[in-house]
Image (tube, rainbow, N blue to C red):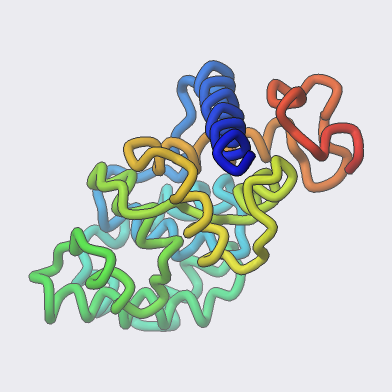
Length: 217
């Protein structure tokens, strides 16, 4: 029975992944960036802020600050004002400056390509590191767990955990590694376009037949 249950779970996961890929073939990171540093800064700014608002801010921010040294050497008050619309701007500005100073002092001004080095930077946790590694470098080191990924994964019954790190570990055990980055994009897009926090569009959901929460949320 246990073996049959595992096989059924694996089959369901495969069906969900296939449906997500079919529904969102062009799913991608919606933060705008042209290099790893820009993505790192944008991801730090995205905490408690929408990607759309971040993109509005970075349109001018990235023209003013082009290198890690530019951020590190900027007057703190100037940087705070530049990112104010993203919220929590004082804390974000301090983290960005400390992060960029470390990039200059320890990494030659370049964004590192390992989880260990990234998470050693101020303001950078696993979520931010996963965004940068997966999207800027094409390295599948983990799965981004934001509010959309958490909500959709829980509703699909892929996890009962509430802690982002524990959710990530459970999802990593179920999803093939080469799909980790894309899987997070799929769930984020699904959460934004169908599986809303309030009044999810269950009747039209492409995952309805595999979702134990369909019509019950």
